[in-house]
Amino acid sequence: MTMHITAPLAAGDAEPFPHYDARDLTRGQGQARIVLDDKIYTLRITRAGKLILTK
Image (cartoon, rainbow, N blue to C red):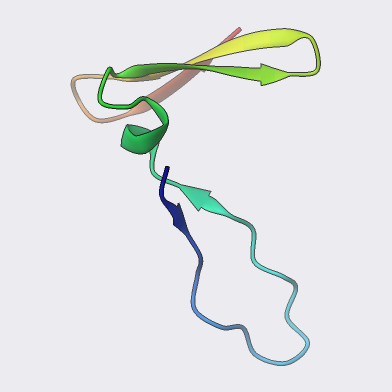
């Protein structure tokens, strides 16, 4: 999985948050399951290249 970190921040800025490539998360399959607490969500990349997250 590729993690992209933004450019260094100026003094006083908040820490950057991690960025993940959706195609890496789905491993080229177009869908991935994401777990938060005990709930499972589905991340899907549409043919138009948009993301849909459903429970």
